[in-house]
Structures are given as structure tokens and as C-alpha cells.
Image: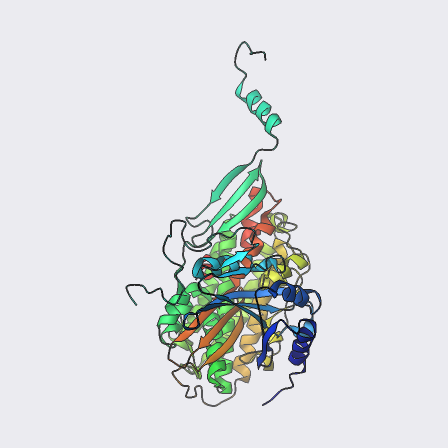
Length: 160
Length: 381
């Protein structure tokens, strides 16, 4: 069964038209699941464009992924639109990568206030710094946790 | 500087201090010993009895489920991912299986899809009833504590007949479901939902139309529509602010595309509207259960599915009792996920709690806060 992907193609074309040189990769995983990869230096501009021009006003979540064999962390913002009814089923993945040795990316709290807690969790679980975050503190881990960021792939616990 | 001959009375000293240093606030810690349901802490800053600021401090029931999932076989993970919300386990289970099946390219038989939706709706009612009973306790209404917990047994018994377990069912597996409908289930389900709908009318009379409740909830804890969207709220919290979003309609999964139901919303954006959206949802769920047992097609309930997670990414999501529950799964061809990102409704709605409480009175805190149905265990995972 193949359904037309006109909406997903349209979104990707608009992004490519606006930021042609800065988009590293785009793909459509399946219907309703487009994906855009940008560099951390441009992500805030792309995010603002997505929110203001394309109607993506709602953040579903932020996920950190540790690709330790490639020496990088990937940060994935899943965003969607509440105002545009024809986009309600669509979840766009906005991705960026940062080197594992000095993980630092700009915070998107100023674009989507809802990502505040997610970025705090990604900070404590992976040790990624979000520049411009209003209070980048631990969220779930206890205050006296002084171990390494626990969701990194090289962290193993004795019971593993 | 003149020194008073005798010390000022304490009241006068406090008044003089307050006049010197401007408004003074008091910081109060609510929790973490079961401040509501589950262990979490709210740090509330008060000026008199007005809440100036409130910030949630979660993490007291954090179990590291995402890490656990990376270390275990995808099938062994099913009971683990149910644990964060045992009152709503099948919806969490369904989100996980949606993501797995998307990666595996498995389409379950149609009868299995109906059975999944059937259990999801029973779980939705069970979860809303649990929430309602705690809401009753919060407001000192003992009857509203006893009745929903008693009526919840109607659906727990039904779920036990269907799945063999009362609350953590582990019923939904890749490729289908574990068990078929037992004999006599349809008649029993119709009887119980019809009885329960009458009970909902009695809830209205004793609680939702009761001035003791309405005066404490109407106009309390306002969450404006735009704030609810921008903060990433979901589920009944978002629908109580007038946004008619429901994944069962917007991105139908299970059997929902073939079923007829409404999405209740309310525009008042206050605690009462968030609470009443859940009452209406329970009515819709009763209708859905009756439709499912009437329309369910015959056929197999399970199809063979591989035990490995193919290479790739999938974002599976369902409408759970507290809103969107999503799994972002990354597979690398083995039997364990490379990454299992698990985001639940309570985690997302946590961002709304400071907005709801700010500017309100401390005495209104239980109403405003619990109208979000924040389940700490589900948020911490």
C-alpha cells in the first residue's frame, strides 16, 4: 500500500528552499514521519522557521541517542502541529549531532517552551550542554548523583 | 539613630521588616511523601496564601526504564514498560508494540486490532476512575473516593476474564494479542457498561453538580489554549483547554478507524473542564466497548512476528489515558533495541503545573494540580 507523500515532500521542499546550504539530510521514513538533519549552528533558525512559517507549534519530545561507535551524540526533536488540522497525524523529527568529546548544542526553549524538561533530562542522562537553557539542572537524578551520565552507551552497571 | 526605650511588639517588628524589604515569600515543600498519588515534590513559593511560583521536583520513582530496555530482549521488555502506569498498562504496552510492528513490518489480524482497542478502552476507564477517586480524597469528598474505586472493579474483573491478569496484562504482543475473548464476555461487557453509565449519572449528581465541588473548581487553575499547546500538553489536559486533538481520530491505530465515537472537549480551560472531559471520555469508552464486542470480526488473533528488531527507526504512539504515549525505537538488527525513548502523557503535562498554580491560592492547589492527572511514576519512568 503506497499513499501519496505530497505533504511530507512539500514540507521538506520549503525547508530546503529556505536553508538550502545548511540542511545536511532529509528523508521520509514513512507517511507522516519526515526527518530533517541540520547542524547545531543553524538549528535555532530552522526551528523558528518551522514554528512560524509551517505551523509546528507543539513539541512532542526530545531524545538523545548515543552513537558511540561514530563518536557522536544525536539529539532528536519530535515536533507536530496542533493549529493545522491536516498536519495532526504528522510528527517531524528535527535532528542534530554533536561530537562526543565536547557535546554542546543550542537550547530550543525559546522556540518551544515545552522542551525545557526534555532538555534537562537529556543533559543529565547524556551530559550534553544546552546553551541558553533557563535552568540546566538535574531533573530525575538525585541531587547527590555524582556518577557519569547514565544513559551513555559505555556506562555499564554491575547487574548487566 | 534613635533607640526605642523598650523592644517593639513582635507584630510591629514584622510589619516594619516587611515595609523595609518589600514583599517576602515563604518556600514550602509539598511532598515527596505522597503529596498526591506517588512520590514527587512540589516546591511552592508563597506570598501570604497566594502561590508566587511552583516548580515540580520529580525523580523519586525514577527506575531507568530506558536503560533497562536497551539491555533486554524486546519481548522481555513488555512487562517492564507496563510498570510506570499499572493503572493504564495496556495503552503503554500498545505504544511499544506499535513501534515494534512498524519496524518489523508486521500487520496484526483485524480481530487482534479490535481486541487491543477493547482492552485499551477498559484501561482508560480504569485509569480515569482511579484518578477520580484520588480527586475526591483531595477535596475531602469521601463518597467520591469510595464509589469510583468500587466501580473500577467492574472493569478489572472484565480485564481479568479477557487477559488473565487484573492490572498488568502484558496482553499485546508483536503480531497480535495473547488470548481470545472468553465465552459470555460480550453479554457481560454490555451489562457492565450499561450499569456503569447509570453510575456516571449518579457521579454527576453527587459530585460534578455539587456546589461544594463546582465552587472549588470552576475558574481555578486556568491553562489558556495557546499555553497548553506551546508547553506541549497532551490528552485530557489539552482537550480541557479546547483543543480537539485525539490520536484515536488523528492517526488511527488499532480498530479506531472503524469505530464511531466523539472527542469531548471543553473551552473553559479550568480545573472543572479538565475534570469533566474525563467524565465524557468514560461515556465514550463505554460506547466503544459495546461497539467492539458487537462488531468484532471472526478470525485469527495472532500472526507470526520475528523476535528481532530490524535496523531502522520508528516513532509509535497511542492516546493513553493521560495523553500521548510515544516510543521512539531504534533497532540495529538484534533482539534488543539500540535506543528505546519512552515519553508519557504525565511527563509532558508536568510543564503545565507551574502555569496552573501560579497566582492561585494555596487552598486551590489540590484541585488545580490534580485536574492534570499527573502520575509521578509514569512521568519518572
